[in-house]
Image (cartoon, rainbow, N blue to C red; front, side, top):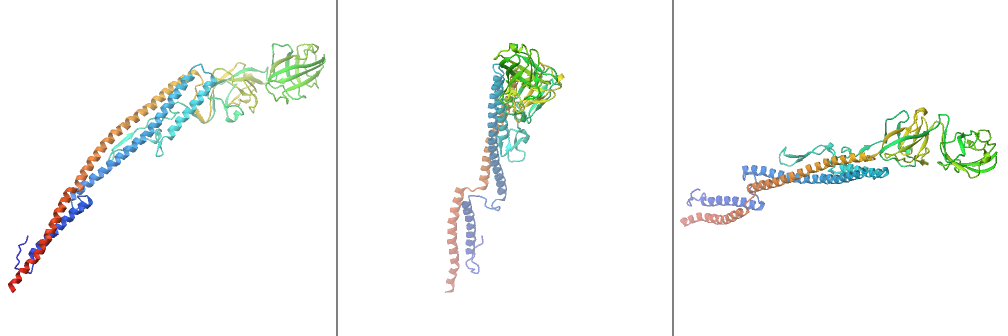
Length: 507
């Protein structure tokens, strides 16, 4: 500090010293007041260049750790969504296994197993829905086709946690069902007599077959491709044979295949007999289902083939017409030429209802169709017969039918139901394994979350010590410099008065 010489008044050294001290005090007071107002120790790079650099890096790391905590929280929430889907899937698979176990018992018949199949198919579809609808931000969580999920759980590049998605858990991959786009009928040991064919338009007014095993069985066939075959009621000797319809009488042509009843309605004499023929399979036959005929010149053992007869039915009576009595009746079955009679059986060997006509409006346990033609059962499956000579009575062709546009499940037999139980156990192992892996990852993320939370607090504390002001200390310093400011101003005033003392020398 410069020496004060009050005898030299050209420069007021004392006042300059006081002014300089006052300016320094003002600068320091301003610094402490700024720190008090901002709460920060470093308010500009000039305050502490090295400290600012260190604190900024620590701040960046602290903020990065906060983002990591957010990422972990989001990841755990995401995994919780996946966990919910897997938990529900395991519950459904347990129910599916229980249903398969129920179907494995022979206390159930084909219709009961078909009902269980429908339920299992619905369960399988729900499993697929869970796989498709368990999403996070539009991304499927239970379908590994979207790739593994990488969570950024650290501040720096590469500090991540990977969720390795399980294998595909859809019901098809788990073998719990088969998605069938089109109806299929797979024949086993197909001979020249049968070939498979299916179409949804074949249903008509009947219900579609359930997925499962079936068989076509030829029950009987015509005598030849040109001659029909009649099977008479063995409890009656009214007829010896049935041949065909006359071409000049309604309904024209050969008698249609089917079951019939013949009833004598009146006997006026040896050559005047009336009778009614009723189609037992088709109530629409000839309008009201029957045909009343009045014949003349009937003799025992002769076919009614003479022109002009009103019956149009070629019959061979077993007795002289004069021996017939009104009220007599008998049933017979006629298989038209070049046709076969067959039935469709379920896995247990029981006949199922099939169509008797092309529209499916008539049904029964058996039907008739022409050789080399395609017959539609009305239940979703059709067959194409071979040539008449290739068809043999008693022949059986096995097939497996699968419905279209659904999740096909087959527990149509006890053996298949038992196999399905094993499949369900395997699927349950896959799902619970994925659930276990998921739980382990969630626990791991919890540990990581605790570790990062502690690290963030420590980094934040270090940044706080460097960057932020100690308010108590700053307040103390501000008070000190405020007092010094006042004393400096007072001393500056006194210093300005000192040179005036020299005026006394000029009095």
